[in-house]
Length: 271
Length: 271
Image 1 (tube, helix red, strand yellow):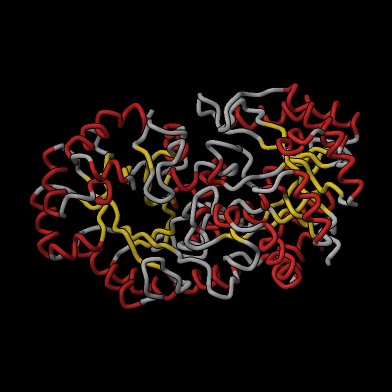
Image 2: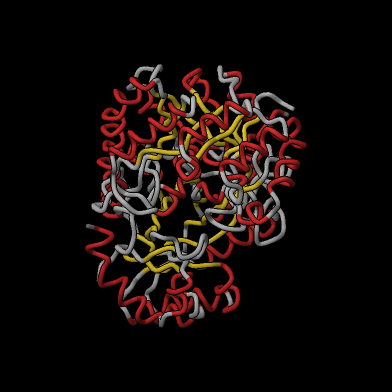
């Protein structure tokens, strides 16, 4: 088993937190990309204990943010919830917390929406730094700009990340979100070791669903190994999270999903 | 009626070419964004005559391209079809022909796919130049990169456009495709008077359909007047085409659609 492979909780969505940790251990997978909900359902302290018992480490926690006040899942900006997300990340022994910027403000002012993201991160950094948690700014795909994230390119995310101490704020790269960018390689060079998390999935043609139609690596249009080589050449080298939003994958037996992913990891992700 | 308003044929999809031209004239609209299919169904020479009789000019013709050989509507690269598209544009008295780049090659090599676009345009330019038709390079939204267009940002489109004589190759800007770009304003400044066509529609939240869920200006998340001001400040000032792919709009009476668009044009497009 490749020691860099991490499975994001959403990829095995039908499993509880406990089933997921036991499943990963059974498959020899040493990393989990955790989501707050399943962890909190199970209990944070119990979750930390279960992870230790199974020698599974947390590569990242999803998620805090929504600094523009626009969140498609409801609710506006909730600083207390963002601080609780930091606490959960630290309690799980993780040190990377994903940030989702939030969608366009009601006044449709993109520049002000984007400034709100910078301001919101600045407000959260001291709390995260004190907890030893690094905040990961993730550019989402431009298709999510209106509803979910006004940060949609690597260069724009880097403009934000570079305002902060590398010890506290870094960049999260997901192949699905960035593969189309003509400036991808220049941006990864620019990012260097400010990349603190790397997620992978594929772009299917045709898309089975606008949000929940992502592919297992190797099934789609992205040259994923090329991106992995570039991100490693820039200085990353850490865990690689497979995060797949896909209704067909979710309907499948997670055992089979893990078999497919582990069987294809060397060829379709590392290359 | 604003003299810059143009209606793209797809916006009144249920109308034939003849119904569209007569409808535009009845509404006092002086510009049509034409599509090859309805024109060819009606007959190119008859179409040109009908346009002259109703004093409707062609702001653009859609479309040629697919230089990567990948076309979701089937067929690969067809140079003869691209030349026929030039002929139709010239016969209609138009001088702007839209190019769609084509999707990612089967080998998933984005760089080679993008080079194929440059090479394909270079091959078509002499024929278009001889016919007095300008080729409009349109960056599509990044969500269409895999399937339809490996050209997905204004700056990348400009990198291509700037290789050619401004008399023969220019840039086409559609609000839907470019609004999310953090580099939008810098790119429009860079483009200057190389912008030769401007299309407008809105981004709806939630999206009713991934391809056919675009909005009438004013109904969505894009600050369209801000983009119109920027494109005019850069040196455009030409017709503004309303191009709306939307199943609900297509199911409505085109008379009502034209009333809505003309009523909102000053406020929601010009601002």
